[in-house]
Length: 166
Image (tube, rainbow, N blue to C red; front, side):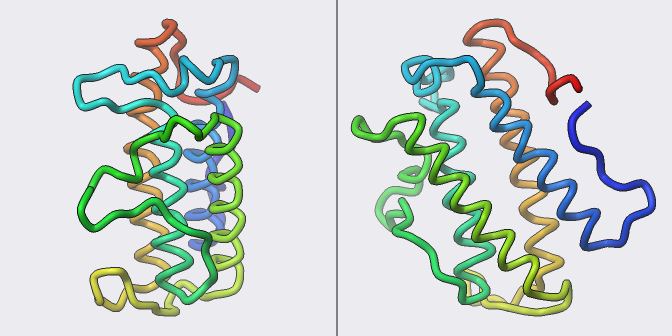
């Protein structure tokens, strides 16, 4: 079943567990694939498994780290190309993108651990947002894309399921 959200946990721990549950589902869906399969576009928009992981890494860095003044690495955003963070460059490997996602998660977790749910930061839009709002948003974002990842993996080789069986 994968990680469960605590049935009686506090709010922050529950939000973190929910985010981690979906993060792990995304990573699990790439297991057993080679680089070519993971980067293969499976729908007309060009979406690939690696492109979705790259996007999730970039938005974790953006929403958690940039919003709350925590350092990030160079992010694949481009004001002239809204989809830049979804594109896998020819020189990027699956190992590169998975490592990027791990680093983004680690940095995001540092932000989460060091702040309270009511602490605020400034989003890319200039709006003031609370850590609570960012956590909820990123649970939604990650769950949405975990669903996309699930469908794309099924299109590649028929593998289904939303979490690793324990």
